[in-house]
Image (cartoon, rainbow, N blue to C red; front, side, top):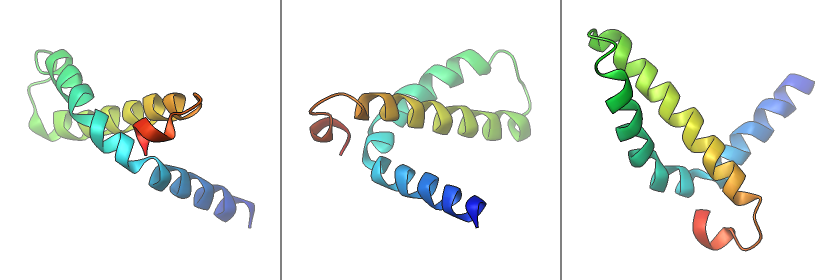
Length: 76
């Protein structure tokens, strides 16, 4: 099915970029925590939002870096 192939492509791409995502996620997590901490008091809301923001932004940054020549030495 088309949806299954699309999902497989996304999972494969995330897997290919996972080392770069791992390397950058802590910087972005600290950024989002500093931004979100004063706005949201509930940990039940803050933790999932932090996780989602960190993962999506880490993937986006590493994906953009992966498009540069020679980036395989930086993002894996």
